[in-house]
Length: 242
Image (cartoon, rainbow, N blue to C red; front, side):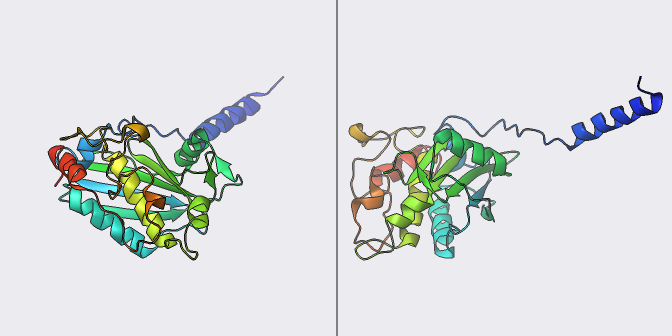
């Protein structure tokens, strides 16, 4: 039979264990359908600033040129009078060479620490050390405020003779995937004129546009980041953007 002292000790241990457990992250504004927050990103009617968290695995931290280019891109189209802030943190490497979408989601939920609240809308960027399960996918946006870049796929297709630089490819992919968070093309931001590539989902039919479906390999000799075309710019402006 357990003594009274023993019972008190068990109660104390139970309370302590419960107090130390990490509560699951609950977000009322994130982890939702891709494109649903397009207007919130673009306008200042609810959210006046944007906080981006980049969680990268060892060896895959984006360079300062990429961060500067992304910031400039977003400032061009988003109405965020209180600014855009980007933070970076290194996270543990994955032991897997390729990741499924469910595994990407699990990694994000373990590492994401910024969430949409008050007048701040947030986005989370995950940069992995491996590939996606589909080898020809270099990056993927999957929730309203979430996207992922696949580091090994990027490295294998950049930086060599006849290829674009790794910095340029990373920047292009980041801006392209943010375009999807902003609802392009026809996925949360209504089209002012039809320009959707019917064969390739939510992408622009202009091969010179940033939102072209294979923008990452479309022009390997180019030394500039593709820009949004007139149709995509018009869509963003009509949905609350600049």
